[in-house]
Picture (spheres, rainbow, N blue to C red):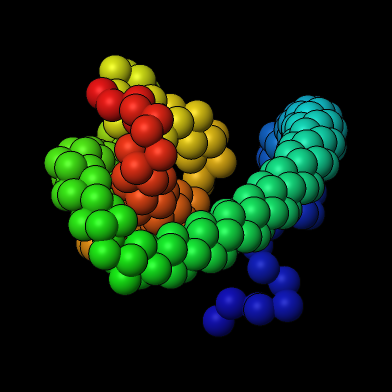
Length: 267
């Protein structure tokens, strides 16, 4: 039987015969192990150096990107603040302009209302005078004839006002529209001014100056969903009522001038 405590010819023991085969095997195994350990140490160190290089480049790139983003953020924030400040200034200017327009419109409306009241009072006075003349026999007949002669002038004046009302409604719709170009509205305004200037009735009622006032100051528009064109405008409706009263008053004044022997300025 083999003695397990004395295994024959292991490499870790010298050859009983005095040979050196075991030593040679030991050295043969030791050299590759040392080489493998050296290679592993070199590879590990080189890998760590490469990792450090990559990490350094990554940190440098991230720092550059972070700095660039921070600069862009600051620039964007500064630009936004500048834009907000500019918009606030423009908004305040617009608010002041709207307030000024409202005050001017209120003042003009009050002035027109006063003129309207005055015209109504004059109309009432003329009606009383007319009734007195009608009751005076011959003078009443003369007044009726004078008023009948002025009916034609009144019809022309009312026809002109109806045409102006229709065109003013169209003009105001063009002013309130976001689709129609500004040149289209300006052409409409030009035609209205020419119409008022060329028509003798328009010249007698001084409609051209009133129209320019409407074009300059009437900026009232209904909401965007409004489909009823006559809801646009504010000042123009005051003027249209004022013109109607003016026509009535002028009719009676012209008849009165005829009775007094002063020929009216007939167109």
